Length: 256
Image (cartoon, rainbow, N blue to C red):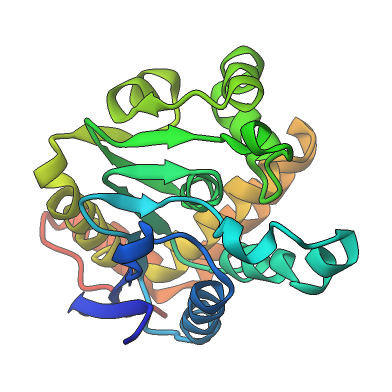
């Protein structure tokens, strides 16, 4: 049985559905390997416009599979090359949407944090509970969470391990939108279709500079933004988009 189900609901849109329901989609070695393989292929696909990552109605992903690592030492953990797992997701050039229902705990919360947009169900549960089993977040939880929600909310989550609901996650800036649980995938697909209809070079460069500039000085970020803004005036889609706007018609973007 495939641990990641790949679906293509529309041109340029790929849904990666985690498929370990018996373990609440816990991220064991086999599941991580399948996610890596899927993203490695997607990252080379020029027709790709948007990726949606999701689980099922019970769990987005319930963290690492502790049965695999409970007896590991430091070198064993290093050899698992878990950093590669996160790096291949970071390298995705198109927007990633996390459609979160149920539990997003530990590595599952960190997986959502690697997305560009998070659509959360009202009753989703986000948490970084690693401290409760004697470790700490190891997939970016201490760094990405504090950048997303600020010091005091992030500290409460990582130091207590207590969960927040999807509604609370939205209020604190941990989700882009919160919707009824049954509407999560429909809304994620709606956003993905909106993105897929837009000029792909513009979308890719907008993602790239927004993320790169977030960890740079303001002056550096503004310089990168200006250079990529200027570069987009060499694309066919810029001409088509602006002419279509002036002519009051729908643009037909070519990706060139």
